[in-house]
Image (cartoon, rainbow, N blue to C red):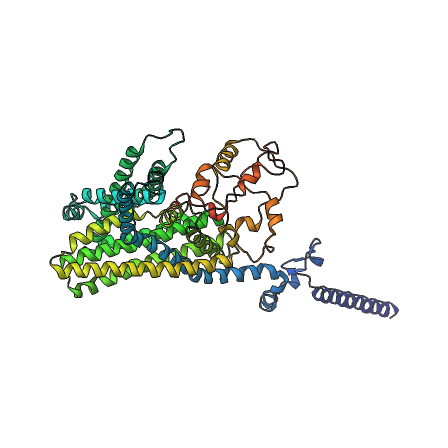
Length: 572
């Protein structure tokens, strides 16, 4: 009996011990759950950092795992900065279409103003220059110049247009159309792509040829002769304008063939070519300056496409005896081409700004830079014509395009009788009115953009001198430069664009002591008039060059980007 009682008591004590151990394990697991310890299948990590303990097989349960997956939670505010940045990116993408179209609209009217100048004011300026050329020798004013430099440039432009138009009259548009129409679709697609590349190359080099001609003809004669003469430069300019006009004519003819094809396959392939541009641009690294170049290129391309569509419509309307019903046949295709161009530009800029963390406010800076070119060309100390400034900034050269349009209009519209001449005169007066109104509106809008960007002081800077140009060329050729330790980087006033995150503008005294960047001869000749501070780099404090020249940083001013930015996706 005693043995049985003792054994029963021992078993009860062992059961009690086992119950206590189970209770202890249960309390431990509850505490670990409350402390936020993550439980995985077979492992338990204490405080998120220790080694896991292997759980018993009895605790592994599919129902428990599913319950944990259904009831687990997380808090987005623990990474607030990350999600705020993602939301701002979405808002930036939504703002891109509006801001981009503002820039495109402003740039379109800038190109339109330069384009209308060739038809309206340039002929009148050429007549005034020729009248002065005839009257000054008769009046006995031997001491004064026969023609001012601007008048010399206008006369050269007029002669180039007249000679190129006489050469274009020998080009048969109908033969070119049937020659292109006889080619296969794939061959025409390849030809059109080659023409686009050739157009960009012609535009990038053409303005150099014209600028070389203008400077050679107006360069002071007391200087040492360092050129081949005005006549060779003039012949090169005539050859360039003629070849570029022929190139654009082939483009317009190819587009006309695509419009008139029965299955519209060529037009579809040409439109799909725009979407290939997204692939070549979106996945590259872009900075603000590179995006500015590509934006200018897109403005020029869009305006050129509008003129090409106008030429196509004129040629088709002539073939159908100006029947207005045929215009509605062409209208859907025209809208489709324009819509595809706009869609590609919006998608391309939206993803470029997203991948490169560029704010949508940068397009306001681009508008201010373009507006500065317009306002500065109206100053008394301006050293370039406005149409030439647009050509350098956007790569848009209006002479070949205007020449082709004149050729198409004169061959499509027959002028007979006095009533026709009266209609032409009224149309010309209407174009002059449109040019003047467009110029007035653009000038007022540009002044508003310049004031918003705090760039008024740059408008009154004197043009670059010869001494500063030579000093800048020497500074540009210097390879080994030394920058002092106390010099600060380029400030917001040097850039000329008002940003929300930049301090207020400096005073004049502080601005004069702030170091600026040297520029080469080409930049001095082609950029907006803000290079007067460049002379201070050479002659600062002591007026000598022993202080050392500063190296030109890759962060260029937006006002310096005018080297024919038609190659917009080029990365420096």
